[in-house]
Image (cartoon, rainbow, N blue to C red; front, side):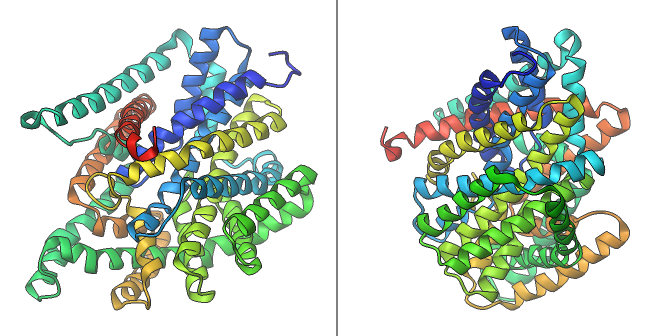
Length: 513
């Protein structure tokens, strides 16, 4: 690519990679309730591809990486919300999923692009994973060691998924274990996995025995659905209210000032208008509902961009819960529109954080920002087209069970279906609010969310996540974190991609091919 040329070939390859990232991120996220920043993994992969093809310098690699990484956070916004509709038995078509992805993804990119100058250039916020990706691309992976490590880890994950599938056909040797929770726990870190595990222990040794002995539930499974799920969802709600009051509102005001300085430009304005029309006509939304979705996407995209820059965490499921609460209890939307709007906002917040990480990489590498903007849009388009088929395929295995716990979507389901707030939901919300405020006071982050989710997901998931968190602690102590983080990302990509392809293959008759 010439220095001043448009990176068409990087966009084309990146579009294909964005679909692959969306595939493995969806599969892994449904299993462990989290999707991890894909910047470092895609930076190494794109660097290896560009070197193998003899392509240009760091800017072309960066544009490819920007396009590729988009699929991960777009997938997260879908799997944190849309499975709630399947669990509620409500119809959602592949076309609906694609349109939700397009609307949320485009809104996230276009709302956040004007913030680049203020947050990255002037304030120089950290965006840790974006900074790490820039360092990888700039160094050029001397000797190809990182690419070899990533490829080896990918192969291990892929082989494990294939072996598990093969064993399932030989009943006496069948096993259902997964490496993804261990690798995911490593990427999450000990603080949050410990809080998650503490929630699981509280359910197993306190909540479930109390529910059965008091006659509130006849079994552990019944107690999980009737008590643990609404209580855990309530804690997530309380954390969302704390975020709204103390983080989102101040950040949104600051973001509005940034927009006043930067201006969104004609292209952004047209894109936002297109997304608004999608919401109104594709989903038969009223004008107030569309305005709420647009306002929610703007607020949460701005907050997601800021929090990502400061903490390297995008609490997009929290932002989705804030919109869910407002739409249900203030405006009384029906469940179908409620979840669809929540998905749009969740996707917008996730894409906003992803885009700002990528823009940080580009700023450090001096990549033209308009080339990166094109990469974000192309990545959204390509991954969106794949998500409808993907979610329909995963739905055949069921959501909310052992195969795909989908913990965030369970919380969305609990709030969306509540005719009135149960005392478990209200009690959890109050506890989550107070717990979150205490955690901020102590400087330990938003671990209330992890504790609340741990209350209702199976111990078979919580324990491996905790083990992965312990391994991360040991790696930090040994100063080997970056190497093993790349390995963990490769394992998730390998098992997730092969696992997703196997699920799609198993559902091929349902999908009509």
